[in-house]
Image 1 (tube, rainbow, N blue to C red):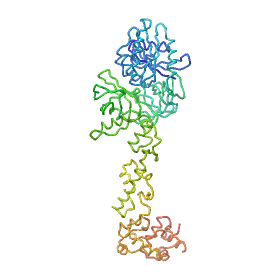
Image 2: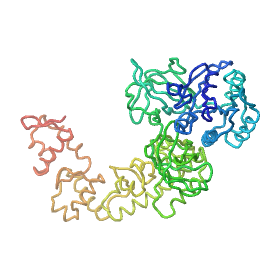
Image 3: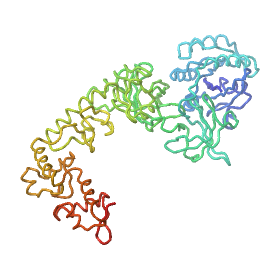
Length: 581
């Protein structure tokens, strides 16, 4: 299917031409037909002689309904520009064409209507010349009279040529369906319509609508039920899980997690503006209309703050309209998560960055370099492709070269930390994260190079243990425990050796001593030695029997037995005897 929108002045015959081409009445409201002008969007469709199916969005031509016109053309790839032979180019024609130019519409057809009322030649030549200076360029042109039918078949034939030249839509892209109508049907519930400009939608799909889950219960296209529809297409979706009161024109149905909703964004105007921009303008994209505060940065760059967050992507084209005049400006979205502008001169620096930012993957690489680290899903939702040079670590993307740069900083950080706290094995991972200004502690592990390693939630240097004096004292204790593994030194002996609570805790963290309880420290592997000796005596056994087989005092035997119980080496029975598990 192809979709095209009309454009042109009120009463120049847009709706009449649509009716002649399709045999359908595009005006939906009785008031529209009574007054003879389109107030809201109209929709009709037909099958062209080649079999190509065409949907037509008929927009209002009156200047008071420019907002409705913008909602109709926002997602449509081609335009049917209509100028009446008996009236010629008007201010409203110019405003509609300015909108198409600002949107960057490059495909269309010029039709001079009411050819039976006046010579269409001069108007056709004038309109073609005016259009040549816009994004539409030199359009194919036809003169016709919808009243008599003359030229209408030629319009349909030339439409075939225009539509054949349209670029192929991105049918695998995520869905962003801007809603242009919402209503209810008895027995079906909420129905929304829109132009599917990219992606595909199917019955049963779950879409996001302003943070709410909406399931596609039914799907219609050109008045017929279908199971799936692909861009470009006019579609009507029957939604489950959403009340009609919760949907308005300008809402968007989205592929979940594929878009970033933002109220702050950086844009660049398509052309420099000599006149000062107002502080407040109206933003149009798709069928959405949102007020925005405008902050000029420098040159053509602007910072916008929207009154309501919209699902936007880098590369989107939006319109800025001054409600106090007829001025409509086109702007390209350059950043949907812009940096704060705090320092003096930051706005000008930011404008320079935007001016130098290339499109596509090169732009993605530049943006990733500026951000340093970003979640892959967030980066893609901004509208960027993933640069081939990016470094992936779990859900994160890191700028090229950043891993090596940060990895080189870790060892000096660890050495500095150990110099201040020599009894600590190394800094906590969270401390390293903060020092490197990383968003997640999981990233630290990917930066460690030998001799660095992770141990117990800390970054340690392999082979670097306790301070020399502490190490000598611990080795002396362990030498005593070699022959008598359960002869835990007394508190006085530990203190005399210079092993206070901090030194002992460091020795335990370094796995050179095992803490049984306060004041009781033994050598690593004591659990296996204790179990081996207990296996040599009858089961179950008493605490006294365990103490004797270990060859130690009650001071050590009681906490050691409880320590073995806690680790599942032994089981304490109801009569206070124990057995090996």
